[in-house]
Image (cartoon, rainbow, N blue to C red):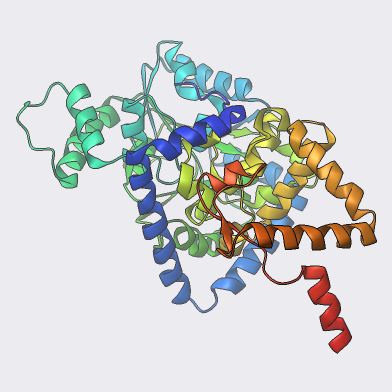
Length: 475
């Protein structure tokens, strides 16, 4: 399915997600599994935080000289017998892929997981030109059967349970015995493997994403746990790499730094099962490999980010750690965010790519607890960037009228310190009395969005300003 931008319906999406019992049970696995595994592997690596600092600095350096590295990468790819295609927009990228497929007479395309292909709506575009694209990552394959978008950038089917997957396999895989046992994950995996093997062997073109592009060698690198990326690259007539401009890394040595961070941050592994390096098409004497090697490098709004206050978002290596640790993502899942990129990274990246007018709810879908920034392997200040988007939203009068009115009222008090101190002191006392000694509220006017799901704590003691003033006097 073409992934429409439905971020403006975030509140409605979130309400449905909160009422979905099966989804809530599945999301519990995200919070339990990813967080603890990351903590354990990070603790085993004493230099983990130093690596994060180095990765941040290296990304900043690469972005500052991105034009030079992109040009160097193209030269290396060309020297290796491949071809680089530049695409400013999603439409251009789809057009490039279609031209290659049609020239080769392709009717079946296999794909390794690529968020860029989701971003540009590639599958439906190819299907509209009678070219079938089959996802070969198990999670991607499952959600493709369901005509759903990914709900997580590294675990696309994390929102589903085993029974749902079994029902989908029985519905779609009609060539297997009806009485077969699909109750175990291993049996589901074996059946998917048998179906996908036929697709690998029949595909005319293979398409993968890229975790990194290496300027030094013209290499594209993908990181997987299933090996589907290798079969997608080596068996068809042509291998097409889809990547955005921010995937560039200067050297192979630099890649080793990011690989030490990526799997630890994403899945809690020291290293993914497969890390595959591809440099050009099959050479004379190679036992396998594609006859053609193409790299489609997409901009789609990222160049505009380079010169602005959201430049730091381009450091992202798509590990998913921010959403793994985000309380909001744990509550509503990825589909609620209404586009390709969920969680805190999506709350910053989506407005950058589609506009704050279409994604204004996302920067507000945060508790600002700071966990996303705390675990980011390249130290992206996600809360700060979300605040920048909130400022843009307010400046353009896109935020709700009640919010603008409330902030205006607060600003009027804040500009008058004496009045502000007096008003907050009175409000504290009134709220404390209204709590009737329970220390919390189950209902408050103008706060139903909070009290519907949790208690609101009653104020205790004096205001922060009064407490600070007392401390200063004692000092």
